[in-house]
Image 1 (spheres, rainbow, N blue to C red):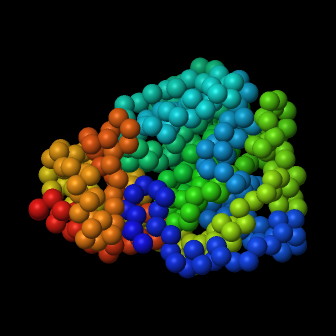
Image 2 (image 1 turned 90 degrees about the vertical axis):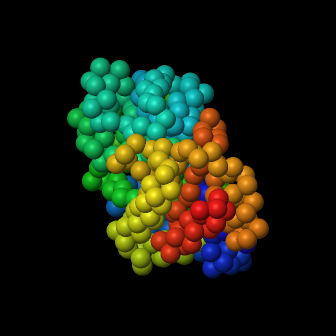
Image 3 (image 1 turned 90 degrees about the horizontal axis):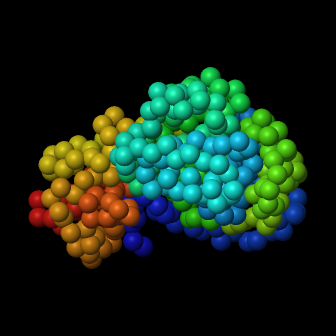
Amino acid sequence: MTKLFIPGPTQVSKKMLKIMGTPMIGHRSADYAILHGSVVEKLKKTLFTKNDIFLGTCSATGMIEAAIRNCVGKKILSLGNGAFSDKWHSVAEACGKQSENFKYEWGQAIKPVDVDAKLATGEFDAVFITHSETSTGVLSNLKEIAEVVKKYPNVFLLVDAVSSFAGTEIRVDEWGIDVIAFGTQKALALPPGLAIAGVSPRALERSANMINKGYYFDFQEFKKSAEKNNTPTTPNISLIYALDAKLNELLEEGMENRWARHTEMSRITQKWAKKRGLEMFSEASYHAPTVSTIKNTHNWDIGAINKSLTEKHDCIIANGYKKLKDLTFRIGHMGDWTPKDIKKLLKWIDEAVGQ
């Protein structure tokens, strides 16, 4: 089994794969309601929230579209500092919403002062931020940005936590996040195919009066089903079994300990890069704990490196994303990986490039 040191999908343990083989149950049965309720309560603990939790059989993009459809009335401020954060602006427009893409240079973090200045215009009733930009390895300071948004009571904070949840600190209720969305295939270390959204009471209230939400992503439908520990449409039961077990692992490890482990893996990678005369692509002090994007200043052949890693150690890293291909490379250090695993990988990369 190839070891995945990429930004996702991430490595899935044999234990989780085995759990996904649990015999099927009816998704409208009492047994499923028990499973669903168990998962929701554990997600609330890991997100530090009392908000509603919705499970969707889709990628995280589905729940991000749901956030936009349900919570943007007037205009959304889309904060773009990479491929995925730029994408949400396009999604908003595809949903028929007015959206301004406030763009940063790729590699830069979103700054609270800029958010404050934009929201002070009164043009917006929602702001969308990608907490950890997977394409650039940037982790913006969500806590500080959330404090700014609190100054504007009619502005809702929508968060893409795809490559940050379970890898760095997030406290939904304390920070005032209205909708947080992520999938299972990143720091949760599960296969793709299930998305999670945490939705605040006021987000549900706005959703109730929003038109053109469609059906599949209507928070009102999710809420009605959630009250019965269920989903509006057929859920991915196999993944939900695994999610229930994985959340037990998160709670046993402790969220603070898990965050610290990811931070340590990031620091080890940064130290290695510096020692090799390489530079981080992400802005200083804003390096993501889950994925490192490194400037390919030595013009290494990433394909050749992966060929060597695959043949000798059955593992891979990732090239740069889209316009950053070959200009950067990315190392995913999230999920079940440990600092020991990352040290081994970096040694193997050294061998591949003749260091």
